[in-house]
Length: 243
Image (cartoon, helix red, strand yellow):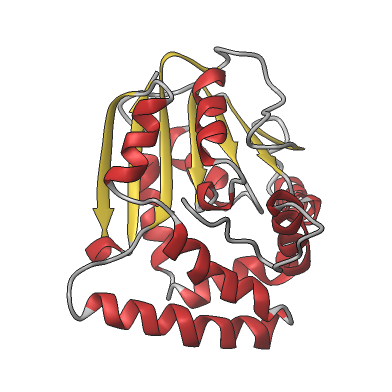
């Protein structure tokens, strides 16, 4: 990636700091807008990503950029691991996740902690699986983040990454660009009062090295058996790799 895309174009703050501020700002409306803007399809995409781990039956899972915990809750119901640990740089998002954990009485199965995706606060070789849903494009240094995910995985453990990608086929590409560039920021501003957060979304997706470029980065940091699986005409992709 040549240019670092940041939420607020603040030259005094790092991308990491700006991303944390952005998610703190939109945390209270994040879940609603996620489902609303994707017309609920994000739930289907999440299930497809989680199913990539079904045959592996991981007991201990790390969910990086866990946000409000939706992906982890889905993984708990589908995979029934012994425990999921969620890590995120936004305290605002984690506060929402903690409320949901308490409401569902899942404190014994799902815990969250504040942490940096590029310096994960865990020992090496600790997790059976690591998941990231819609979080890697927010990493300040993508290669460092992937290398640290690789570090905390047990040998033979699997990483599953779900992320937006760029559709290439007409007319999906044109419709997608229009929706992301014009509709999403407008609705985001209306409900979250932070229009930049939802303008940053299409900018960060456009700058993200998706497809074979992302797979090449996974290969570079040491993952084996890497694969890319496009969903919904390439709007999203699931990436997998084994340590």
